[in-house]
Length: 394
Image 1 (cartoon, rainbow, N blue to C red):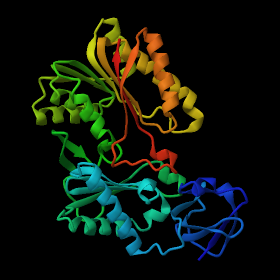
Image 2 (image 1 turned 120 degrees about the vertical axis):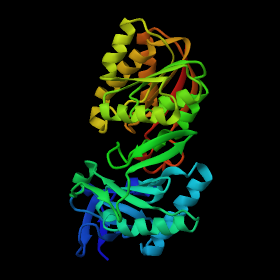
Image 3 (image 1 turned 180 degrees about the horizontal axis):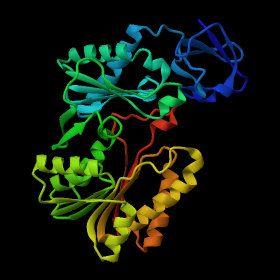
Image 4 (image 1 turned 90 degrees about the vertical axis):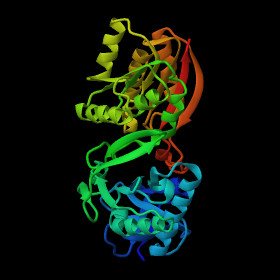
C-alpha cells in the first residue's frame, strides 16, 4: 500500500480527531497510486495514523477513513452504515432524515438523505465517488433489514466542491427512474420535495426541530418568514395556529412550491407570498409601519470562506437590524446562520450590534443548532455550522 508520511509537527487535525490531511502537511508519498486510492498514513517518525483516500488534485490531499490500519472493504462500510442508521433510530424521526452526514459519520465528502422511500446522495470527494454505488447498495441492504424498501435513488452531486476534487458535476438517477416530486410529512406538516431541482438534496432537513420549536410561539400570531425557500417555517407557524403568515423569498420557483405546500396543508388562506430581495422588502415594510408578532430569518450562508467573514458579518448585522425593527414589543424574533465560519461568539456579537441599531433589547429564549441527524464531530469543525437563536424583543 502507498505510504504517506507527514512532516514533523504536522497532522494536528487528524491527531485531534479530524479527517483531513492538507497537501502542505506531507513530507513524502512512497509507492504508485491512482487518485482516489486508499493509502496508509504515518507520522514523520513512522507512527501509524490510519488509512485514507488520496487525491493529488485537491488541497485536501488525504481524507481519512479510519485511524486504524484496517481493511476498508465492504464489511467495513456496512458496519459504518449500520452504526449511522442505529444512531438515527435513537435520536430522530427517521421517516425523512439525513442518514449519512459526511465526516461526522465516517464518510468523508459523502451525504445520503432519506425522504420516505427515496434516497438522495451527494458525493463530493473522489475516494467516496468511486464506491458510491456500492455504498448505495449497502444502504438499501441495511434499511431492508428493518423492512424499509427504497424505491428510488437520485444523485445530487452538482455542487461546486466537486471541481476542487478534479471531478465534474453529476446529477441523475442511480437505477430506475421515478417521480422526483416526493411527498413527505415532517412535524405534522406535508411537503412535496423536488429532489431533482430543489436546493441541496431538495429540502433542508437540518432545521427540522427548529421549525417544530417555532410552532409554540405562533398561536394567533402575525408572522413574517424571510428567506422562506419552499415555505417550511411559515407552514410550521400556520400549524402552530398563526392568524397570518407572510413568506418572503427571491426565488419565484421556490415560492411556487411553497404555495403548493400551503394548499397541500389547507393553509392557502393563512399564508401569502412575496417575491423579491428580502432587504428591500423589509425596508418597505418598515416604511409602511408594519409590525409582526413573530419574525423568522433563515438566510443563506453569507460566507463560505474564512476570508469573507467580515463582509458576511455586515450582511448578518444589516438583515437582523431590519428584522428586529419589524417585531412588536414583547414579540418573538428567530434568527440563524448556516455558515460554520460564523461561530457562536461572532454571531452573538452581530445580533447584539443589530439590537443596538434597532433600539431594542433582547431576551434569549433558546439557543439551538442543527437537528441530531446532522451530528457534530468535534474533530471536524465544518460539521457544526447551524446556529438558531430565539429571542423575545423588549
